Length: 403
Image (cartoon, rainbow, N blue to C red; front, side):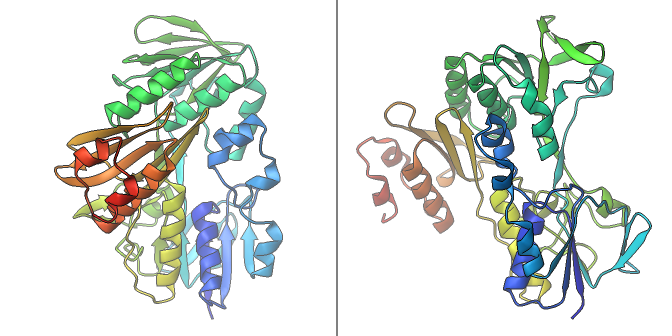
């Protein structure tokens, strides 16, 4: 029957192994993860788990017993040091494992501040794994002072959680607006106003010059405009990098991640990749998506193809973010948009519809599940409603699906 090894025990790795069994694969499956915990959900780490609203056990995708019941061997707390594609082996310390097929679900890692500006001081955190959240939790307490570096969704989510816990938050963003890389000015304006209404001090067009430490722990920050701040801890949310080191060392093709074909196959026919670490063909170029839905969908498609399905992976991008009492839901990809149509409801309800020419390409929906649902269905069906109809408050959104 052979042996399939999956390295990277996150959402993509867990989804891929489960799908292999669901597809009827009866051979050996080994899932290798560097962390000591079985695969778990990452989005709650910066939200419900950090707030203390979700217990550790609820983070786990499945109880560990499920893997044993499915005949999936978990190798946790284990790091793969090398891949030998010619010999079809993995090296784990002094151990060498043979594989028939290998899947790389190595995810991504957060960018960190350089040690030259104080990035290695105590009290400087990223929010990517369970250890990060556990280390940060004692700091997130009433009356503490936090600096958040980066005005993307990770930084804004961290600001919301810290503010809820009574932390005084200053957030700096080097660009002239928060969310500039991922959203239109309308969405930036919405979330800037939301955070300021909760007391967050947002400073745009301002970067971090350096951190100041006392006895090895961060105690202050100097900003690019010369401002000096007293801080008790720092949260860094300046993006992530795909986990390509193993693949690159093994000689696999790299292009904004581990380059795969339309089926999820790397430049080595026995090695596959899925999730945050993988870039795939899309609209004449290459695309890499950093999201839980993509990790699940791509991993399941790759599992099918490892067993011979030859199914082209077609992404259906969607994302979400929770901040205070606002749920943001995003459908589609806004790259290349030329105009934005605003549809506003009562209170904090709003949606922004992105058009590239006459084509609807994405929707940002805040506390507007109907707008999100309709927008997502329209994008997936290739339909683009009249922008004037979208903006008109009297338009019944579901009617747009029938147009």
